[in-house]
Length: 212
Image (tube, rainbow, N blue to C red):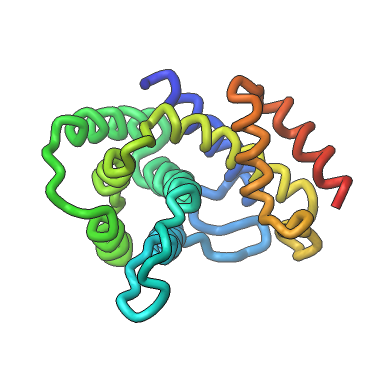
């Protein structure tokens, strides 16, 4: 787990630097925009909740969109890692993550996923990093582990870089590819080739994007 955490933190640091400049840890982008990782966390957690069938008045027989919940959790992981680097520095952020991961792996979980996500929102809104909540949320998905988070994170990190390279920040990027969000296409590529490398995935995204 340690080697995968190191790789993910390295990729996140690189993505943030490429996207926002080398001074991103000071909370300002190259364009002078304020960075608020906490807001990113609780907004993505709210989207994860909305992927669950929680409404008592609408579509009560519909199923939870668990695949999208996984995507939202990985997005949250991007932002949690970013805030950890800001608050603890790169190396200490990894050590702290390993400790909390170890601590939560032995916990007995008596709550529902929606409760964990709501706790994540509350903590992020109060400027606390909901790292423990994140690890608990991963455990609450029966077919999802931190190894799966790693695989999906590599995919989403690659997609995020691809977006930045193709006009995401200035609004010229097309997010819907032939009727489906780019996330879905990324997941399909990974599912068809679980051992795909970062560069191979980027090339596959590039090829698919040309066809829309």
